[in-house]
Image 1 (spheres, rainbow, N blue to C red):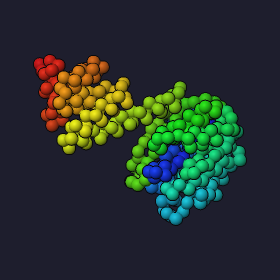
Image 2: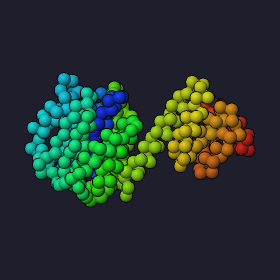
Image 3: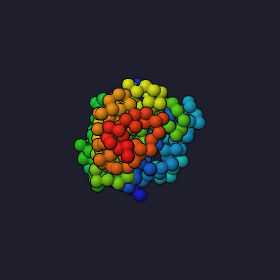
Image 4: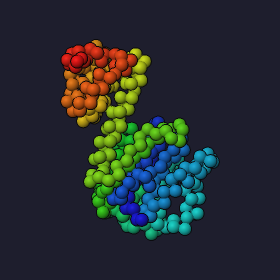
Length: 300
């Protein structure tokens, strides 16, 4: 299978986060291309893709902490009879970068390295795509996920995949943690505009992250701190009746029963199941639930 793909691997020097992001005119590119492990590294493998490069290179880096991205990738390439058609980018936990574009990758194919990152692309509309990605990433501000996404847009502005668009993915992992831990893990499997969909999912991811933090604050009785986080989550994802419902309850529990009830009513207008759920919530889960039901006349 030949995968025309552009991708980026990078380390954030400020946080130690590691990540990879990709777009391709191929179904479910994220399941094949992007790999990352906390405190170890990130890998993007593409062209005539061999997904094993991801776990194999990360395993090697984990097994020998003195090993760098360059040596780990070279060892894997040396064992691959088809290395001429592979394209792989690697960044390790120290920020060392390694990249390989095989001589037989379909043009336009190439890569561009920078400080702690590498952009690679094949089957592109123009040979300038990797450099455009690198420039976009370097100029971008914000967290690593935002900068990775900006690099993908840089590729699109330069023409992107010569065949068009289909799927995209992003994974970001923390500087330390268990192998299963991640900061962002999103995939768009099949979409007419995968980057727009990835942007929407990234906003949702951030919104639900705020809601998770707010849940913990609520559990600790810190209502004044939880309420604004729920409200911000609902603003980030205005189409989410889930976040709207819980932000309304949070507002009510923080003392604004009338305002919170109005927000809960908006969620219920989108889906009547929220009205049913409110009646089922115990005071432990929703201390202000009874007051909200009373204000809305839902006590019967």
